[in-house]
Structure formats: structure tokens, C-alpha cells
Image 1: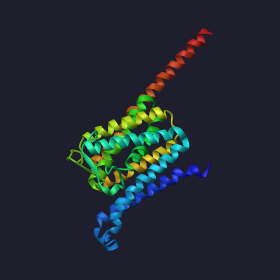
Image 2: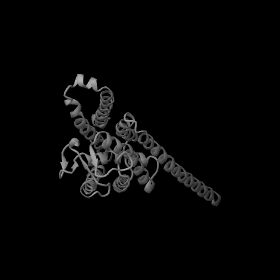
Image 3: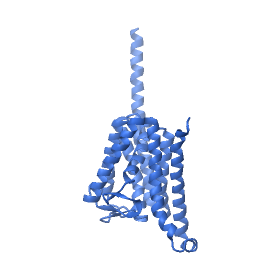
Amino acid sequence: MTFFNFVPWILLGLQAAIVIASLLGYGIFTARPDLLAYIDPQAKFFTWAFHGFAVGNMLFGGLAVCAEALLRDKLRALWAILIVYAVSLASELLGTAHGIPFGAYSYTSLLGIKWFERVPVLIPLSWFTVSWACWILARRVTSGISAVLFATCLLVSWDLLLDPAMSRVTSYWIWGETGTYYGMPLMNLLGWGVTGLVLLFLISRLVPAPEGDPRFAVSVYLVNFALPFGFCVLNRYWLAASVGPLSIALAYVIFGRAWRRQNFAARQALSATGAFLHRRQ
């Protein structure tokens, strides 16, 4: 094993450190504003952290997943990165300009420089980061269209926490209309599902059998899940903190059971075929 094999884990470790620092800082200083006033009287670092930590979180997470994907799946992964980035960017540009498919919204300046002053350049990378991890996890449970649907469910489960945390708590993006789910329009979930389905279908065609390490994929998903989950818990968004994990568990039950039934049927058919051939001998 060479040094390059450790690079994805090092980058993911940096992202995890940012997640931990973000949750600790937010939890401590929002509970003790007097402590913040003493340590950082003009709140310069605290203000910067809302920008710097968010950018660092997406950047290191994206680099970690891209590095691992390229090491394992090489050229196929490169095509997946480029296509997912382009398609998700197109979807986000359409959304911020016309409200389709996510509803009307706009990004603030907290997530760094933007494409055409609309979509932060790291947002499409974030789509790839979690979509790729979801695809690897789904392929360890099922295959074909079931894997695409399962991975899409995992992606939407993440958004059930991400949107309340990042639009209501931190205001990284702002909705054009007030929705029923922590201010988020329910159309956004449909948009996430459709966009995720398209992205994961494309990934499934480009890399039908990914070579990625499932332990790394689990770690990526957990690190990216932890930040919005922590924000939701700290703000007592109990509905979001519940439905996110529960939707993951439900997806595993549904698709895992279907895969087990399919495998059982295949084994039964193979056994019957073997018995028939044995009798023919």
C-alpha cells in the first residue's frame, strides 16, 4: 500500500476535523454568547468560520472522494466526476434562475465564489461527494435499478437534515417562499429526488460495479451526515433529526429485503437446475 492510498483518508480526516470544530464552536458559543464576547469581542473569527469552515468542509470532502474514486476506478471515475459536476451545475443554475426543480432559492456569499453569480463552485462537487458514496453503499446491498433507487433514497435522507440545517440555521441559501418543512418548500424534496435519480442513473451507467472501499463510503456518508444532524440536534429540530436516520433505516429494510429475496430465488433456481442435471446424468 502506497502513500497515495492514504491520501483520501487524510483529506476525509481534515473534513471530519472541520465538522467537529463547527459543531463544538456552534454548540458552545451559541449557548454561551458571553464566552464568545470575551474570546472574540468583535466576532471576527466566528463570522469567518461560517464561511471558511463551510468551504473547507465541501472542499476537503470533495477532494477525498475524488481521490479515492480516481485511485479505485480511474478513467471511469473521472468521467463520472465531470458528468455529475456538469449535470448538477446545470440543475442548480436552472433552480436558482427559474425555481425548477427545487423551488425558488438563492445562495448567499458564505459558500465562496459562484458560477455566473448564482451557484457556488463547490456545490456540484458536493453533489458528487455524497452521490458517489451513496452509489458504493447501494451496490453493496443491491444492483440494477434497485441500487439506483436505494442510492437516491440515501441522498434524499441526507437532504432531510441538510436543508433545515443549512438554510434555517446558517443561511447558506435562502428560499424564495416559506415552506412547511422548516421553511423549506416540499417541492425541494421532489427536486432532490429527481436530480439525485438522474445523477445516480448516470453514475450507474458509467461505473456499474465501483471498486470503492465500502468502509470509506460509510465514513464519507457519516461525516457529511454528522454536520447537519448535529446542527438539527443543537437547535432541537427533532423532526428532522428523526426522519433523516429513520428514512435511511427504512430504505435499508426495503431494498435489503428485496435483494435477499432475489438472491434466495436465484439460489433456489440454481439448486433446482443442479438437481435436474444430476438426474439427467
